[in-house]
Length: 240
Image: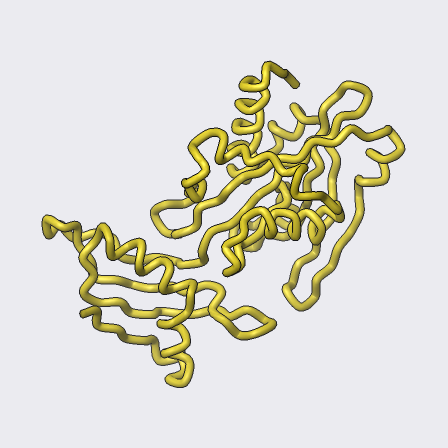
């Protein structure tokens, strides 16, 4: 039996909802298979703007390996995510369609990233990937365009790759799409702006030559996506 406790700022009326949330229960079921957990303290919870369901849950757990060795128990639970590498080919040259947006945590006003987002609880990675393409990059894509570059590399049964495994539970699944565009279409995709005030998101699209973009990235998920895509090309007997 796990003993639960809550920080004073977490309302008592919210506590049962937090414990029973799919976000927390999904993490808990996976973790209980490999660790012995005796206590979990909920330090803080951030909620979705739309329905006030838990979005980020920070916990401090008292836990051990099966042999009794204690483990670091601070976790920020946010669930899994998807990212999409958008490869545009114009006159035989590859480009990437990226987004710039503020990232307060890393002190960046315009972090350069591939379109990405948190998985919702439909657990439909492909659906979320298409939704993020539409919302962040203003691209209407069909499911048939999505290339599961994570599945091709590590298998379709794996959730994805961990970006910060000392703190976050998140694993990211990567897809790619390829499109051939004209110079006029390429220019039109560059510099478009999207503002989602209810989620504090201020996004601008950016088109950059493929190789040039790779040298500008701070966000490591972009580089993982490029590596997986290039491995996919090799498996197809293709090259950039």
